[in-house]
Length: 495
Image (cartoon, rainbow, N blue to C red; front, side, top):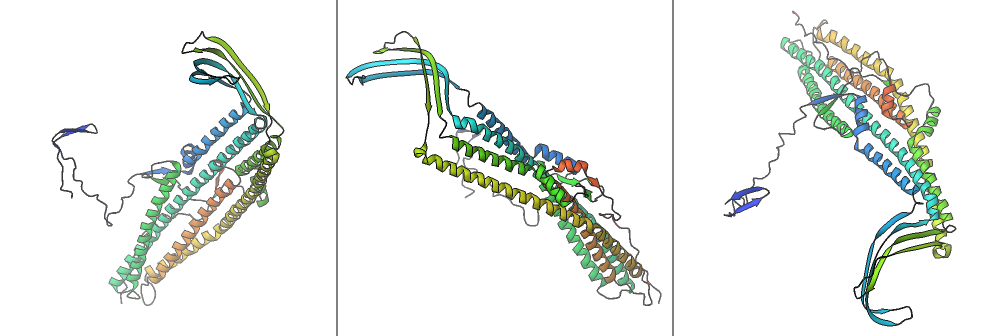
């Protein structure tokens, strides 16, 4: 199939290029796909970023934020248009008419005639429904107000997503540092077990295998963490409208708890603040008022007329048999008031009922929003408080694990005791406990930070403002460890 070629001995112009006697159907090699043993290469470049920069970038470039800002401008333009409904529109243009054949006059006589005319007229024309002219600007004003509030709410939510994505990236980098520290300790235990086996002081023959298995687990964990870090960096880049190929690296020299909402405020006070500042509630209130304006408009519609008025001035030229006379000026004016009752008023009653139901639905939606806001505030406040209270016990767990590791290191690595034996199980158990304690401690700090930003957003405030007023809390135990020092090797004992 790929060897069949049709040759054409003419000059063929294709896409701005030329061929002479070239094959018309050129054989193409099949597409090449990477094999399972050659996965996609990781990002070769990285870019440090802090949370303040990330929030500012999202505020300027995030597509979702820019979409709602465009919707705000659209709503403002619609409000301006609704306010101008009382101003007549200006119409102008020419008209040409020609008739050839039978015609009829007003007396009913029929005759054959050829006649025609052309005109040019210009002037204002006004056609409005008074009820719509009175109430639709009110609806448009509430829609514009609601869209502004909705844009603010969307901005707050996107900034919250950016903050959470950033803290996810910080946590994964912290997990990576913990993994590196634990792997370093485990590799040194493996080296000690191998030295003990060579010296014949191991307690069991499985010490080397046990330590080697733990090393492999930690290495596997590190590989998975690198993949998760790349994925988290790509998600953050998507929110910031940045190139996802460039891996973002969080610039956090020290990972500590960050207090955004003052702790002296009670939950009840936080809920009341949210009720007055949450933009979603402002948007819901605007929706209720717009629905109420629609109800008032539907009630007033049968009582208020539709106004039609026009004034057209210009000129006319006409005649018979294609002979047009001189262009003569003329003008036309007319005014009308029309009251319209749909289905003798039954249609108007049905319209009122429909809009009344829509008004009630908007009220219930606003009540649901109040309940949702209160639940979000309470949930975030209680979660933040619980994680903050757990920080001290999390730090104590790390201290105890460090102390347990120090004791096992002194006894096992020093090969002391009457039997002078090396036991890898005890230090490996201590390392596992230290790994779990450090991960738990890091998660408590990160969940506290996330809860603080969730609470701040639930109170109707943007994360960008929250980070500018945030206060870092000092901790007695570092959240992210430094790479541990080299451990002593077991010393063979003389028999």
